[in-house]
Length: 232
Image (cartoon, rainbow, N blue to C red; front, side, top):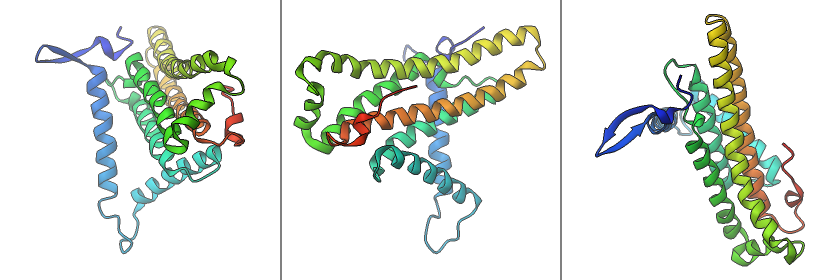
């Protein structure tokens, strides 16, 4: 029983083993780009929107609305980053219902890479918003004694994001594998439905937490976003 796509080698390229995690990541990326290009190819004011364009606009508006509630401003630049994270994780988890497809999010390497992208994005957005001095100052607030704790907390965010996403996806796979041996016809359908639900929830949580971390780095000292804590 293969619980992670890292163990499945699809092909070898110049001596490098390309596993299912990489290939499935490429598939998800190609689908996101292809669907976006297909829907927006006639994106002009004089062309009436079709059902697919309307669906895409609704999804974008929902993502933008959630981000604005967290950041308390338009934060369109944050929406591009957090929205992309949400769509990638959500589509990866939705493709769980395809036979033989292992979501790249079921690999710790993928979830660690996503968490690392958030760790890099937080200082990038923070420095771009208030400058290097303002961002570094957040590490010694409310006192310089908190410097080592703030640094540890910064890295623990990425670890918690990676483990949370990986653990939820893998727990569903393990439970499904166990139930499959007990009742191979009935339980897989229920577990697939449950997996889709938890996959969407985890995509939402991951994107929202990334938005909260970025908002905290870009907010002014008295901004309410600085007082937000990860209570999940």
